[in-house]
Image 1 (tube, rainbow, N blue to C red):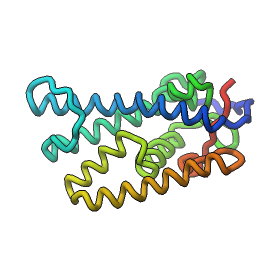
Image 2 (tube, helix red, strand yellow; image 1 turned 180 degrees about the vertical axis):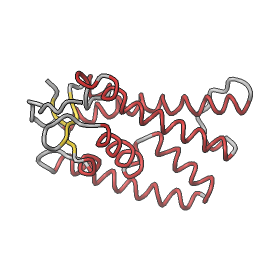
Image 3 (cartoon, rainbow, N blue to C red; image 1 turned 90 degrees about the horizontal axis):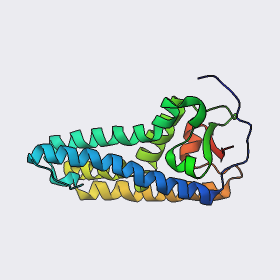
Image 4 (tube, rainbow, N blue to C red; image 1 turned 90 degrees about the vertical axis):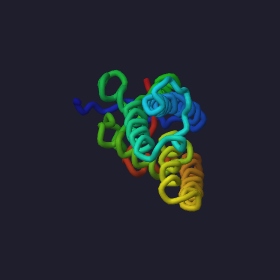
Length: 189
């Protein structure tokens, strides 16, 4: 992808970011749910429209978790990956809200930064508001029990709250996943 500096430097308004996030949360949840429904239907040998990882045998739950997480990450990466020039740094939610993710220096975001932002930042660290994170906690609960899963949920809640506070408190509006990936969200032109 050619390295063209993005002209707009106006940070994305926190409310617009939250609306974009909820749009993306819903659509990425559908992607994850598709994987769980597909694996559940294969295991049950009939169409079962149920999005419950815990109701699957352990190996099937693991496969659904991996496939669902892959589909979730792809949801966040596809616009940049497939339509690099026009939609670099945008998800459907960000397209609707006219926002864009760029690197800290203003250049277009690359796939490496998006993977760090999405998978490590949003799913693993700030995991309370993501279907893939919820499924990961469910799978951990299946392996280690509810107590371990509850500790992880409590930590993720605290980290997510801190990240939201940072978005409102920091002048550039960066959340933890932005800090990790060295990205920022700006108004799209």
